[in-house]
Length: 86
Image 1: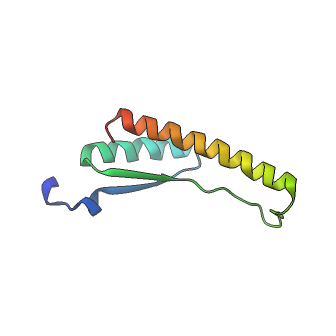
Image 2: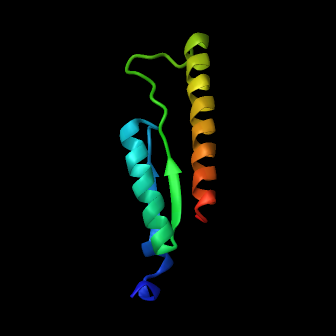
């Protein structure tokens, strides 16, 4: 049955905020990708709070730090997936 699935049907998108709840979703997504021999795409979103002026230097620095942290977290997730052959 698995061989009848197209590669598009074995693609998994994981949206994460790296919270404990997202860790559970990550574990499930990694398991599915491994069992289905599928691909996994992970994403996260940086939040600019309502009313936050992204033109202010301090806000740009704040968002830059969020981007740096998110990039590091995504790299760690990629390593965890690679360790499982995904």
